[in-house]
Amino acid sequence: MPPTIEQSFMKALFHGIIAEDIIFPYPEMPAEDRETTSMMLDSVRRFFASSVDSGRIDREHAIDPGVLDEMKRLGLMGLQIPSEHGGVNLSNMAYARVMQEIGGLDASIAVTLGAHQSIGFKAIQLFGTEEQKQRYLPKLATGEWMAAFALTEPGAGSDAAAIRTRAELSADGSYYTLNGSKIWITNGGFADVFTVFARTSALEEGKKPKLTAFIVERSMGVKSGPNEQKLGIRGSSTTELFFDDVKVPRENVLGEVGKGFKVAVEVLNNGRLGLSAGCVGACNTLIRMALDRVQERRAFGRSIGDFGLIKDKIATMLAHTYALESITYLTASLVDAKVPDFSIESAICKVMGSETLWFVVNETLQIAAGIGYMEEYPYERHLRDARINMIFEGTNEILRCFMALSGMSGPGKALADVAKAMREPIKGFGLLSDFALRKARSVLGRERMSKAHPLLSREAVIFEDCTAELATHSEDMLRKHGREIAEMQYAQRRIAEMAIDLYCMAACISRTTRAIERRGEDGARREIDLTTVFTGMAQKRLRQHVADFQKNDDELRKAIAVRAYADRAYPFDIL
Ligand code: MYA
Image (cartoon, rainbow, N blue to C red; front, side, top):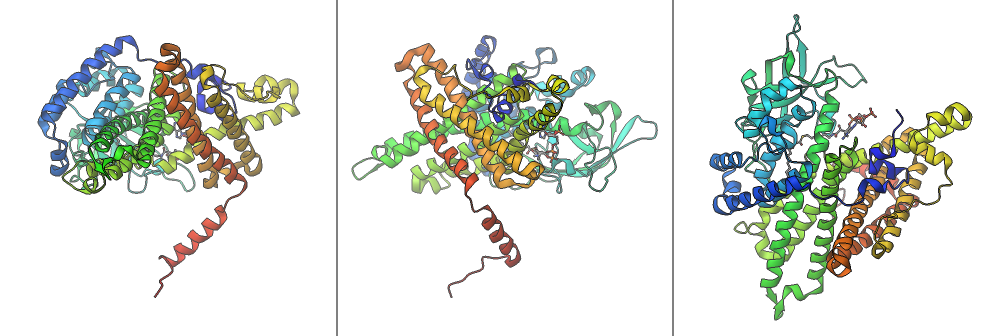
């Protein structure tokens, strides 16, 4: 089947198509989830206020087992597991809201919970057979069993397909024997159930091996190394895992044999969204801390909040957090609406989430100044905890490349299809995808965002213009460079940056439109102002990327790096 516009807002955008029906009206949490979520959040807040000491978790590099037990009792281990399997059956929006709360309270706990359910057992939910679900989900929902996701290996980080852990089918076909090891596995020290990715085909030069996903129980023989000592999220457990002749029954294959890469990326698409929700929560906490500080701290006879440069920091923190929150819940609602493809959207959420949090934590620490740097205050812990988000669940660099290449693959195919249709007009046009058809028919003119509220018409026009730039530059790059684009990371980064800002703008405009329709211009003043400020900043960045396509020093930078590789040092000394 040719792809349709409805499949992905961002994939359509790379064609210059604004599929606004996907993002308007801005979503709301389903009513049935609202009450459960509010009650859950109340209990979580009460419990954290009375019983969780994040400073202690950080100092002792451990979460008290009693704390995890209470989280289990509150139902926090099976938030999205269907009720028939003993879980709370929350939607993706509601799950994100709970992860937001916990991300704002304690990063080590958020990561432990996220590793368990965002990725640890997610593959059982998405790809498991009914027998697998019945066997595992009830115990995972109560936290009697904890889960972990075991993908990364010493030689396979970003390059997830390069896994060496081997799974051999026994002669009678009844079990697989796993041999190999994994590194940096969150929950590795105590998890009972692992989603493990292993090769089920021989390594062949120049070919990607076939991966298969397995449900592996610790009792089958999985061994863990000691907890790693980390910069942040110190209360979470991160260990190596060893598989020495671990025998796994054939019925524990998750999904199809040889289709494990698909299982891994689908799980990660979900996980990346959970991470971004956690970052929304952490940004909220830090903004509160910064706002307290700017009012308490006085300099030159006034509170520092009076100064323009502090106001500027606060406004920028709020505008970026608003954009982050808007894309996070928009994407979660798309998953709830079962859009077939949200891979680019969730990668954007992860990158925007981790970088907004890094910006917000850095600015909050700067506002706190001297005390920000001292161990007895929480700022430096927040900074250490935040850093990992730009690394795990796919580094932000690899995700930028993914967004650009995955986004451009549609226009690439459309260009090829249109060229073919021109050669064989009668047969060819019938085979065209929606995208290619719209392009072939075009002189489309510019796509419009007609559903934006008139008060946001300036922002909508900026969005439309920038969308046209994204499509034009994607197509230009493809025409000029063809498949070579896969090696052009500078160009990929520019395309990805444009895509990130465009998705954020679209989500802000949609959400603010809803706010204006509900509460009128005065009632939605805050949202309007944040959308205006965010769009202005995004437009400047986009203009810069467009200019950089024409004129840049990419080759010079590469040459400098290559010389530095040879020198293996900074080459100067004034002595
Ligand atoms: S878990 C470990 C995380 N590891 C990664 O994320 C690995 C990163 N690498 C990748 O994602 C992939 O390997 C890349 C592809 C993208 C590099 N959705 O030839 P290919 C398709 C759908 O490009 P490769 C951890 O850290 C692609 O289109 N499809 O493959 C946990 C292509 O399809 P086709 C996708 O070059 C930490 C095919 O696959 C996707 O090998 C704990 C092959 O693609 C996708 N995403 O590499 C976290 N990607 O063949 C707890 C690719 O049809 C967090 N494809 O063209 C808890 C949060 C708490 C927050 C706290 C806050 C305070």
